[in-house]
Image (cartoon, rainbow, N blue to C red; front, side):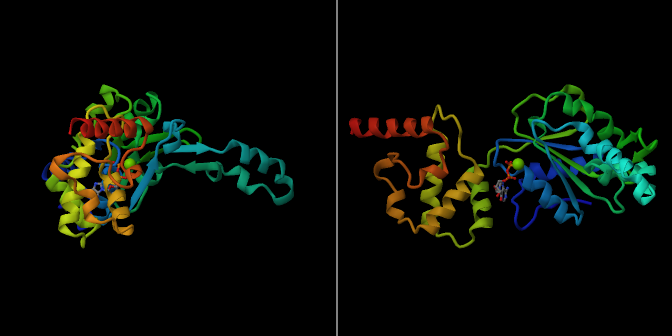
Length: 284
Ligand SMILES: Nc1ncnc2c1ncn2[C@@H]1O[C@H](COP(=O)(O)OP(=O)(O)O)[C@@H](O)[C@H]1O
Ligand SMILES: [Mg+2]
């Protein structure tokens, strides 16, 4: 089982290496990187390339580890038990009917090998990763209500992504193989764009990329635009048929790019950019 990249996803050599290392070690692959650098989509692509179903768990600030294992629906059981005289109450007697299986349970008991994505693990509180240590390490957990041990037949291929909003505990890190998706260099970016827009004109691409990296390298930006913003912006440039001349500026000056709202997402950054352009025009 090896991942060699795919038609829709540009994987750098070191990313492929990391994926295959995680497969060999049978450890979760922890993928960090700026938002929009293709972390979530990586899990989908690898699962598809290896022909595995992908179970996804999107973590929120309120997510608890237990929800990934199972939840016991005591309220429904109580309600059913109150109505039980009417229809015999067989359902109420069997506690299994009130166990709601979480993604880990589903992944552990799947018939075929599956991939499991725990997306944006840093959104939850600090206890969340700690609470999953044993489950991810031993790939088993105990259900007290039904008194059964849920143990993975074959270890799922686990992807964990983080946007780096919080530090993860050391004990958690020890159990993962780590990879940081670096922001793509211009060459990789060209390949990524080619995947999404195979027919983009060369000169438009060159001008757009230059503008994009100019914006990105502006010192002091609060939120640098990333791959997904660039893709959105290109889509707009094509859809709106923006002429090339608007993107090309004379003598290497920066100008406010058209449809800048696709790239810069807060007013401070736009103001910063406007100031820069203003200063340039004064120095001319
Ligand atoms: N290496 C890549 N190859 C192809 N598309 C990419 C790549 N990296 C990012 N993208 C595109 O960027 C967008 C954002 O990716 P996503 O996985 O949601 O980012 P993240 O989870 O890191 O925030 C997706 O639409 C994806 O198609
Ligand atoms: Mg994501």
